Amino acid sequence: MSDGTRCFGCGAAVPETSRFCGNCGRQLTDPQAATLVDETAALESLLDRLRRVMAGEYRVERELARGGMGVVFQATEEHAGRTVALKILSPELGITARAAERFKREARMVAELEHPNIVPVYRVGHLGGMLFITMKYIAGRSLDEITAAQGALPIAAVLLVLRGAARSLAYAHEHDIVHRDVKAANILIERDGRVLVTDFGVALRASDVTLTQDGAVIGTPGYMSPEQCAGKRATPQSDQYSLGVVAFQMLTGTLPYKADSLPGIMHHHFFTPLPSLRFVRDDVPPAMIDIVERLMAKGPRDRYATTRELVNDLDVLPFSAQERHEAERLLGRLTAGDAMARVATRELPKLPDAPTLRFDAMPRPRNTRRRGGRRWAAVAAGLAVIAVGSWAAFTPRPVVSAASDSAVALSDSAAPSPPPPAAPAATQRAQFAGASRAASTPTGKLRLLTAPGDAAIYIDGQRRGVGAVLDLPVAAGRRRLEVRALGYHPFDTVLTIIADSTVSLGRITLREQPAGP
Image 1 (cartoon, rainbow, N blue to C red):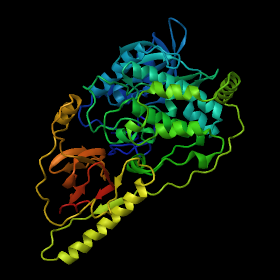
Image 2 (tube, rainbow, N blue to C red):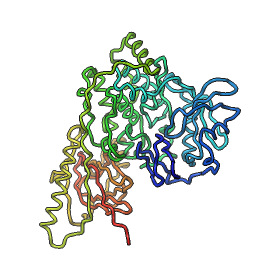
Image 3 (cartoon, helix red, strand yellow):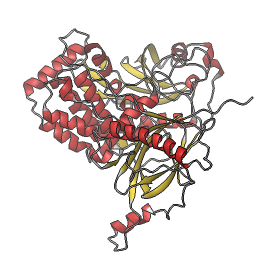
Image 4 (cartoon, one colour):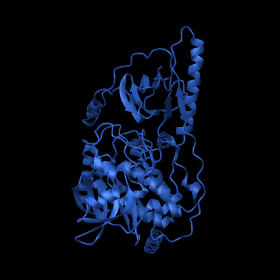
């Protein structure tokens, strides 16, 4: 990337050598596809080039916003004279075959979605090397802008937004489409208070597996579900989690999890309990708190089985016609930029620092059992702090503390030969068929993050993840764990997995290898 380049996601300035934006965490390069460069793009600004390419079709006026897959401009259709939002993906921003295909797929999917809470699409095209979509222009503001200016919102306004957004997502999910980037910036409020969800730029049909690979992190860090942070395939429950973050933001005026780095934010999504809404403000109905806490459950299975069930729960909350009218009027005024009395809230308690283990190179000792035992005891004690501090407050299942001698055993010796691995797929088929065969090897679960974020995670010599694993099923027993990354000393140890329990190791930070002469 050249000097002076800005992040395509948030517009922040980024160094030439950066792979990720330091402000929003968005990946700036696509390592699996060649970039097509338009040599003329550098000679003029994006707005000027767009005006030249679209001349005769659209009169492009100004930039409105930047998103994960495109830049949105306000424009006027020359033949119809109507104002539209023109979303483009330009070659100068780094078109790849994958990005172009995803952009075109977005247009096809959104065009299929006809719902009063989804921004309608008018046209899809390709002119002058630019892919574009024209959508209805929303004369309003994003929810992100409103909360940034106003802070926490009244309960009636929160409920109005949640109902509209939940209905749009339920409709999309019933059409086999997952948004994957639900956030306050993608929820628009019209001047009459109507709620609209936009920017399905990273949307994905549940049946479409050709353009997404395991290990790819897609979304906006502050709103991503734990499974998205782990690079797992997004589901409707992932959208539910992100909507829970939006709800928390509306109720408190801030995101639940903040950190100075992308790994820090991901760590909070993985391990940090949701801050108490009861502590922040006194007027939140208990039923609404229950909904938000269920939406932001760490495990997808602990959220709603379907988003329609969420809609039903929201509809049950008391909300009279008068309250709805007042909420629409309030949101309309905030959209117009009017100053309103702020909702009284208390400051969120400080989040715990993300626990980090730094592992240096550990040569195998020679007849130093006592010293080796002390060293590993210190490591085990550190793991105990992580497990107790990070997980005791929220996990509904038994979580194995790393301090327990019977839970995690770290050894200086080489890893023993593991028992034959279970065959999960065969086991599932047997269960569904009602077979009476003996049960397969019992399993526990493993959670951890790595630094650097592209470190490979191996269990018993088999690669099981990159950067993070969340509730990874692992056969019970003593298992060899390795974390490797180019240019870093590897981490290699033995731990014991207990059946039906979870081992949480927090973040493992590898030590950089010294540069060669």
